[in-house]
Image (cartoon, rainbow, N blue to C red; front, side):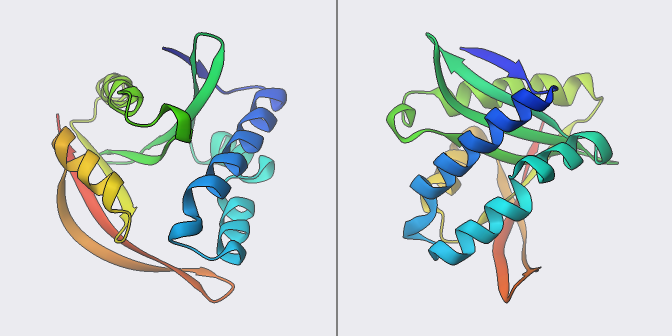
Length: 163
């Protein structure tokens, strides 16, 4: 599997299209179409990703395997940990170890950033992802409800992995 670090406007646009595709495929069982559209625009649109990269120090990578774009991840160094913001794999490639392989890459990034903790937030009803994170060694350390505007909230667990 190859990881393409996103930097150019063209790559950011490619990532935004991919994110919208995956979010609209993945989230309908847990979120309304209205909330998915809102969250994609707010967090994974071209403008949102560009701002995250330029102003918030995010790193995004597109995952490629045998010429196929299969997913992406986004991380952001915080003061005491690396924040794993996004890790999404296209439906046809889930369950094949792509997420675990990507997590290994994320651990390398954490080490390069001199962080010995990785934190993420995960929807409390996203049981498949929670099980995967637990299998990888994450532990739930807290829960949080975050108002994201437009009468929507994110009801999440905070999970942590110690390197």
